Length: 62
Image 1 (cartoon, rainbow, N blue to C red):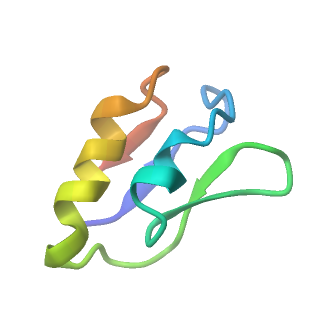
Image 2: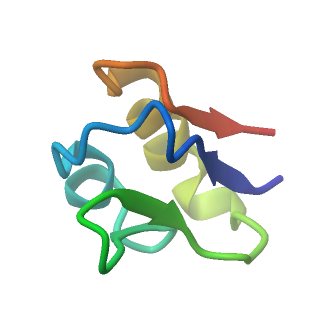
Image 3: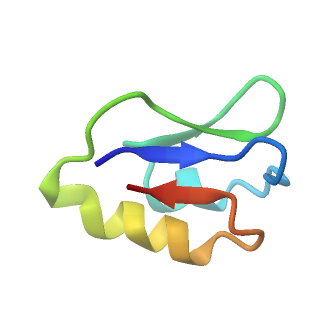
């Protein structure tokens, strides 16, 4: 599974990298981005938590 961020929807609140910095980080444009890496089992719960807590539903973990 990987994380994905819809840049058109993202408002740049910074919540996802604060919850799961192994997968999400802030980009130079002030919006979040997901690293192009498989999500390890030991951080999957954090990645899913970031997806669920995104205030604008810009994150998908699939």
